[in-house]
Length: 281
Image (cartoon, rainbow, N blue to C red; front, side, top):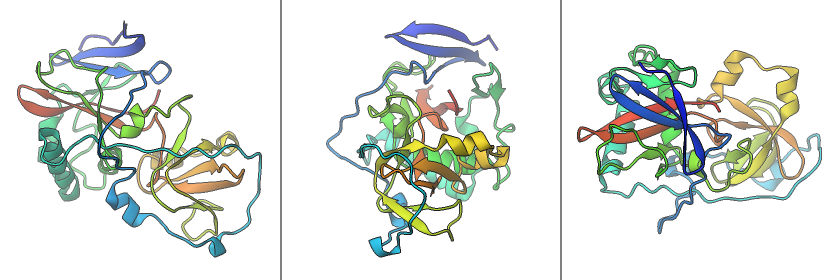
């Protein structure tokens, strides 16, 4: 495998590597281009996320510690994959494979040489432990595609078919709302903010499709590797500060960051392949 190379395209730094003859590109969040998302079909959240969002009445909200407040900022995310389109059909097949824990299908869409990392190494299907139905990969990829996907015009593999689009999931990664890269996107309607990192903890606030701040003090006090890894699954709790200035926690099922796991998909040889699957800056 050739070492990773940094180069400039349209003012954005990209990381390039060649894996078994397939050149891939991933963007550093420090200079990641911000894509303007436009579609006639606005899908703030996937129905599955909305159906599982915890709806509560104002009477159930518990008083919690308060810090400085800040302006409320809502957002709309768009899923550009139109029903019946080629990529939409592929994504539906991928969703089914995730539900079935179909490792054979996953292996068929991962390049033989593996997927790149920022450490100039590669991850193979074996490294991702796809044959284990309980491996973190399954929740990580399910979570990545859940909010929706968009065409990512500024990243492309050199070996991608000439007529192939590059798709990125989740759409949060390419959102025009990103300013610092540290934003936390609460994806869903009536999502509970808990006083502590537990579903049995009192509700202190409710958020709907809003951008909130990260509670850095929690991280400074220390967080285990297991807790950190759980944030990219459906089982973690992300510490936040609400626009009202309340410190609390939101389930990782509904909280996303631009530096979380994202997947890029392109057609190579007429078949959809996952050319990038990574997290971090």
